[in-house]
Each structure stands twice: as C-alpha cells, then as structure tokens.
Length: 109
Image (cartoon, rainbow, N blue to C red; front, side):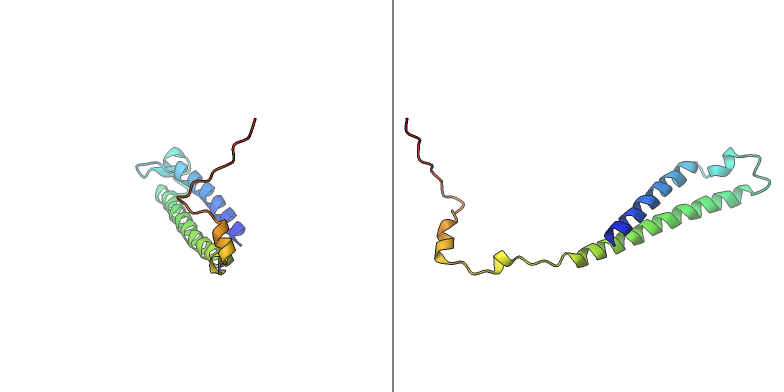
C-alpha cells in the first residue's frame, strides 16, 4: 500500500513540475505563448485550467502524503523483546560497562 502511494506521489510531483513550468510568473501562462488559440479558447479559460490543475495536484500530493504516513505508522508496531527480558547475573557481568577499559593480552614474541 505504501509503495502504491509513493508511486502516485512521484507521478503527481512530476506532473506538477511540468504544469508549473508551463505557467508564466506574471499570470500570462500557457495562453500568452499561443496567440492563435486565444480566439478559440480564450486567455482566461486556459489560465484558469492551469491554475486549477496546479492547486489540485498540490492538494492531491498533500493528501497522499498524509495517507502514506498513516499507513507507514500502522505497520511499524514492533516492540523490543530484549528490553523487556530480565537480565541474569551472568549476562549482566558479560556486558562491559561504558566507562570500563577493555584490555587485550599482548602477543608474546
């Protein structure tokens, strides 16, 4: 499920990059580059579509990201069995303390 959400987020992100690159910074957008289609589609209609598509893709990515984090959080319910296990005296003695220096016997020549 997480993989499906991740692939959808990736595809929507790539599409959003393309849509943003189509737009112009001052609101001209796609319609300003294609002057012959302005009579047929209208400048305002093309700009509205690109703007709505941008907002729709951004909201889609946000919603999918929230669903992915919820799905990832529900699958990671593991508990440490080592932390709950009681230690015996032999096991506690075998674990070196943090400040203790370990010495290795020197090899004889």
